[in-house]
Length: 617
Image: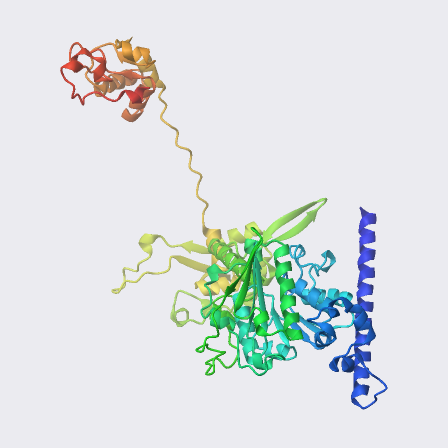
C-alpha cells in the first residue's frame, strides 16, 4: 500500500511539472504570434502570419492539412474555414453542455474560445463532463477545460474566466466575442445571457438537458449583423419574448436534484457547436433554429422541432422602445440564486441555524471540549471555548446605580478581572457548583413586593459576586459579564435534571385470579356454541350481575389481608378467563350470546338483549 501511494505521489508531481511546461509553451506561442502580427501591421510583407492569412480568406498549409475533411464540404470550403479560424466564441458553463461544445469547436478550429465557470470539478461531474479527469478534482472547471482544449488544438486561443458571470462583468467579457453559447442550468443566468446578447447584439445559442430530455434553440438573432442577411431587418425572439415571466423556484430542476443521462448533454452540446459553426460560416436564419426549438427525448428516441413565438414588439428589452436598458439583478428578478452550490449552502446554513438555536436554548452552544492525554488514553473534558472566554463591560443602568441593594458600581476592573481569572481556573464541575452557589432562586410567592402601593413583579433570581470575601448582590448583566459566561449556560446549569420517575407498577391481579379460580363453574349448554369451539364458562351459583360478584371478591380479598384490585382490573380478568354470568331472557333459553340458538327465538325475533357472537370467537 505504501508503494502504491509513493508511485501515485510521483505521478502527481510529474503531471504538475508537465502542466507547468505546457503553460510555458502556450505562453511562448502566444507571444510569438503576437509579435509576428505586429510586424505584419508595420508593413513587413515578408512576414506573413497566420492571422493575416486567415483574414484574407486563405489558409496556411497546416490549416488545410488539419481541417481538410471539413473543407471538402461545399457548405464550408476554404472561405468558411477561414471564417471559423477567425471566429471568437464564448461558452458560459463548462459542464455537461459546455464540454462537448468546446471540444468540437476546438476541433473545428475556432480561433478563440472563452470559457466562463466559477465552479470546481467534482467526482460526480466526470460521468458527463468528459473534458475533466479524475486528477482534476477540486480544480476550477474553466481552467481544467481550457487545459484539455489546448491539448486538442494548440493553434487556437483559449481564455478561461474563473468568475461567476453577473451584471457587473458580463458586458466586459462578452464584448470580445462573436457568438455566445448558453450551457448553464439556472434561470437567472439564462435571463442574464439573453439580455446581454440583446444589448451586445450577439446571437445566443441556448441548450438544456435534464433526465432523458434535451432542448436547443437560437435567441437574439439579428439579420442586419449577419453576413448573408445584411439587407434584411429580421430579428429573432429573445428569451424574454418566449418566457416573459420567470418560473417559480419550486418548478426549476437541476442535474444534481433530478439526474441526467450522460449522452443527453453530450448530444445537445454537440448540436450547440453545430449551430455556432453554421452561424459563423454564414447560414441564413431559415437554416438555423431561430423561432424554432429542437426537443429530443432519448427514452423513445423521438426528436421534433416546434415553432416558438415570434419576437414580441412589446418586449421589455428587445423591442424598439425597451424599458430595460442595462443589466439588472437577475437573482432578485427570478427569486432564486444562480449558484446551485450556493443554494445548497444556504439550505445547510438554515439547518445549522436551527441546530444552533436549539443549542442556544439548551445552553450547549457555548460548550466545547479540550483533550488531556493520560498514558495511552485521550480524555475529552467538557469546557468553554477560549474564544468565548471574554469579560464583558459592567452594567451602567440607572436602576443599578440608584438601587441600594445592588452593588454593581463598587466593583472596579481589577476586582472583576481577578474574579474572571479565578473562575476559569476551576474545573468544569467546580464551575457549576460555583455558579449555583452565587444564584438564589426567588419563590413565586415572594416575587411581588407587597409593601409598595403599586406592586410590581421582581426578579425571579438574585445574583451575587464575592467582593473582599463578602457575598455582594449584583444585577444579572454584571454577573454574566464578570464571569464571561452566557445566560443559556447558566440556565442549563441551574436546570435540575428531571428525576427519573419509577415505572408505574401495574396492579397485580393475582388475588383476582385466585378468587375466580375458586368459583364454581359450568360449561355452556348451547350445542351450537360448543360446535363452534367457543370456550366459555358460566358462574354456577346465584348472582345477579358482575357488580355483586365484585363485592364478593372485595370481601374475599379483605378477609385475606390483600388490597383488592380495581373494578376495571376485575372485569378484564373475567374477560380473559372467558367467565360470564348467565343472563337468560326466558326460562327455556340455553344461550345468552345469540338469540337464534334458543327455541324462544321463533316467538321473539326482535331481540336486542343478546350480544354478538363474533366477539367470543
